[in-house]
Image (cartoon, rainbow, N blue to C red):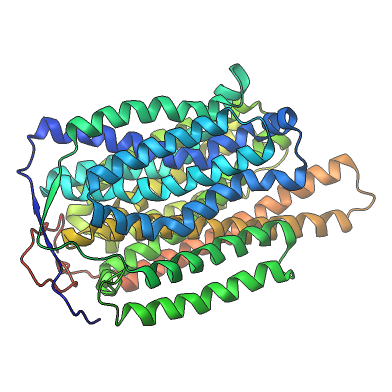
Length: 505
């Protein structure tokens, strides 16, 4: 990577007192929760919204896809804007924009207005999510405090989807589907007040770097193609040109993006962010965790509601033990285990725990009880995800030059989003194909045979997911370093403050 100009340095304000830092974490946590739960809270409300607005089953997917397309394709841009415009300013702008888009979606009187609002939500979510993580990275630099803060953040990142299912069920069943969107306005209002009073400002010295416009276009279009292609795979199948066309274009654009970044004067993504071995391993771990996590939420939700007949609220409550075990593992992992053993031990152990949970899920059938069948699998899954996510996220942002904290944080969100798109498309296709074949082998297609086919399809997807997490564990062992990680691989022309690693070997 070459550069023709000296980038501006960033001078941080004096570190706020500990009490203020922890209040800042509350604000960051609210923002992250709002973005993460929005991936699932609307899913529970979809049937009610469809009945109210009168759109078709074929159109229903666009309520979810509009959000994921905008969110996934604009993440790198959002992360870089937080570096260039200032994190506090970008954070507040993201909160306000997300809240306004949520209010518009809640008030939507037509299908088109709801889709447009969801797309705008995704765009501001792409600005907000990496900025929240960047604020966390630059606020907590003391190793012990950083470990605790990332434990909380990682728990929210891992449990947000399940919290969304619970919240969506309560709001839809007791109030109205529109409150699954209106709730963001209340959360954002609290977060904006907190951000204005608590989030510290960073003062830039020297000229402001320019935005890499060609790099931004290449990256955004590539990510759009990836998310769009995998979204089409779920609805049109893998034989469709609307699946492979966008995916092929995404790969070509990604190659062009990397080539451009090697010679850009102000690169959108300095390649040093990726070339650090520990950081690259962390991004890969987040991608694999995202691929498995979002698909499993989908399958378990369908299993509970369609196979066992749970109500939306009961479905959400069923996930509470998983949330509790995830939070417990996240705190123990980041505060006690990660400083002692490092990610090379902790992340593979978490991956294997999740793989074990997948095997337990394969034992579920139409007559399984909650306590004896589903509960053990959910608890083990929570322990595994709570071990993987905080350690991987903390390692992914550790030691990044403060000038590039936003784009490095965006890569974490991008990895999780792309992983979720890939995993949901692959596993949903696998489950559907398996279920169809099962029905064909058990003609005539009685109601009982169709129900058994669905559970059989889920089981095959769980086995595949178990193999994916075993592969993730092996990659983590091979890629993570066992020695003390380097602080940064990004060359800096001016001295900037750096963070001390939170673990050593």
